[in-house]
Image 1 (spheres, rainbow, N blue to C red):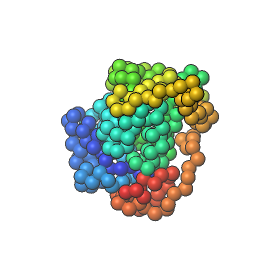
Image 2 (image 1 turned 180 degrees about the vertical axis):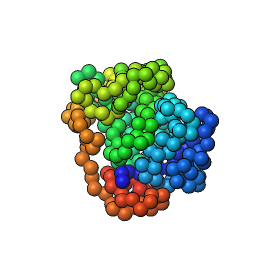
Image 3 (image 1 turned 60 degrees about the vertical axis):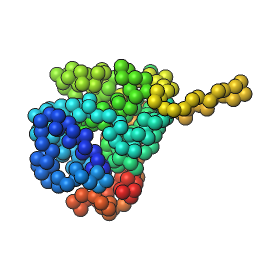
Image 4 (image 1 turned 180 degrees about the horizontal axis):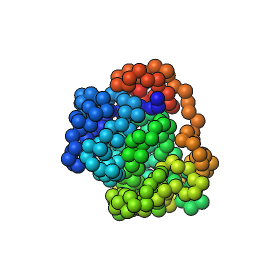
Length: 275
């Protein structure tokens, strides 16, 4: 079946649907989900249902790039404690480590955020292990928007990554996505992993948080600053297959407070146990 996501993830979708002239209640009914989910953000629902909502939202609003429209408007602060926890980190590198380490516990399961070093720069990728094509692409675009917003929180809104890698993108749509994200967009390199992500200069990881109320400790010749933990080599992302990280078996019971339809739970997260 795949993973789960908190119902709070529907709020940004609803905001974008309203902006584009759609109706969220009609979208939820189209995918056989209760409208009351909008008022129960702590509940969890299967990722496949989340895919279906995004796919239906594109049809309802008439936007073929609904995910990108949403991704350009979302802000990390919309993600509740998960978002505020990352934007309060002292540096961009620390923020990415927080985002990577708490995603499965606080937001959604069956998903991995991975930072890898390339020959030139680094790549921050997101891989979802929940299989299914319908709505998957629309789901990855808002996630790209959240990643991009967190990155720009540190060096500034005018900053742009070297490239945003997106799977199966048609050339005719690239210009529109670049306009929405204000950054270069391209498909995966030949022989590269299809996992979406963004590439940027490794030196950006040291960018300070402009909003953090803290100061750097003064160093002396006898006191050197701690080194950042090493970033894994690209070998951590095999070139084929969706599950580029080993899956950890989970409980076979449906999580409490979920709206799943008797589906088995599998993944590497305790998000549902924390509900």
